[in-house]
Amino acid sequence: MEENFNNLNSSTILFGNGDLPTHPLTKNIIKNAKTIICVDGGANKLVKFDRKPDYIIGDLDSLSNEHDFTDCKTIKLPNQSKNDLEKALDWCLENQYNKVTLIGFSGLRDDHNLASLLLLKTYAKKISLTIITNYSTIHCKNGKNYFDSKIGQVISIIALNRHTKISTEGLKYKIEKNRFSSPGNGISNVATSTKIMIESNDWVWIFLNHI
Image 1: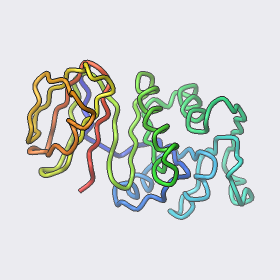
Image 2 (image 1 turned 60 degrees about the vertical axis):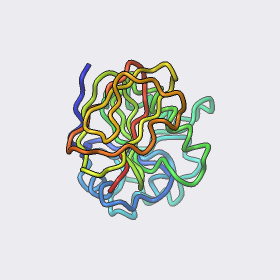
Image 3 (image 1 turned 90 degrees about the vertical axis):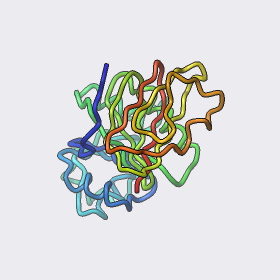
């Protein structure tokens, strides 16, 4: 199935307790979001952007100043077999939020960063997800997908399976049904067009680094 990713504005955001967003792109998305779901202590950081969450989800062990959020719906999910992001994604699925942008899920702890990337892949089959950090926009996709880009933008592709065949258009180093012999083979390609195409027969992480 072909998909086009030509509008990064998202009506639904999952907001985490990682690095505080500083890039103008993330600030704009936060400003214009229709629904913001904070994952536990992420609520304490969201208020720095003059927004309050519509929902706060998690075991609530890192939420402080709870009196500041009395007008928000709090959903306590104590299941310790899943982390708060997993619980929030499950809740989004149950409540038919099928396109979600994740902000605030990078930085600070490296184990959390890796878990977020792996969860991006796990849930990509069920829900349209994008992670936006202070440095890049991250997708996990398979099939043929088109992305808006800027000429000179650094684009990286990481295959989760070394047998994955990958093809691209609009990149400096064109790839035609190639397999990456190393996870580093797809790092630091460069966009030569304002729209790029990436096609793969298995899941790949796609990093569109901010300019």
